[in-house]
Length: 278
Image (cartoon, rainbow, N blue to C red; front, side):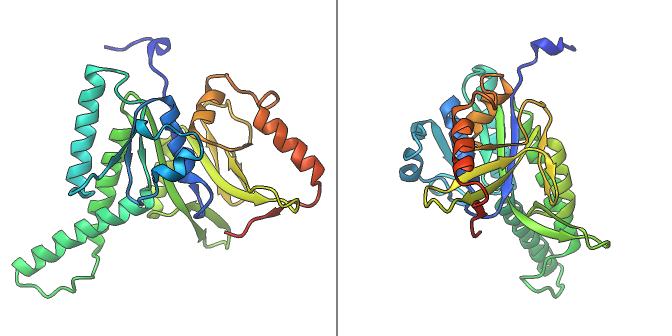
């Protein structure tokens, strides 16, 4: 039965994409400040010792796969079912789920599809290189990714997903940077989420700490997005909990202490900011 829009529990679905080392995993890990989170730790990027440095409650983080487990389509589907049932029993069982990263998981599923294709060819007496990936394998992987991402996104909790960035050039020589997955999946993924945060790192000549930034608007070669229309074009330290605070109206750019400090630093280093090496 339909329900009033005001009765729908609002959650944030956020895609972080950018070069390696721009803070994607750490930004996602801050979701744990909101409660218990489940993480598809495909890149093994979630390290308790490192996350504790950011006052992230690592005891709230549940990583998958565990010992003796592996990431497959079936195992991810089983985890989705388990989390869905847990949320049905207790809406606060999980604050959210995280995929780190789409880039790695889509490669794992592609390899799984190619392995099945190879095994099938061998059973049929056909000659096929074990490293060969057929077009139909890409089709299977794409279908699986679409199914899984949408299921996790539609759970009644927050959802965060990361991806590396890749450079694309169209027939008119226009360059864009998009999530490092297949082109069709990249378009789908940007469309499925509420927020697309392009992660970037900058350093100043004052020799201070690196400044981690997030872009939330289409800008030049990058594809930021904000469906809530509550975020500024960009913020410093675009951690998941801070994004939620902006969405909920608890933070505003003019009163955000991190943004105030960043503006003061930029003013002190006027004309001296340079992008950090990737």
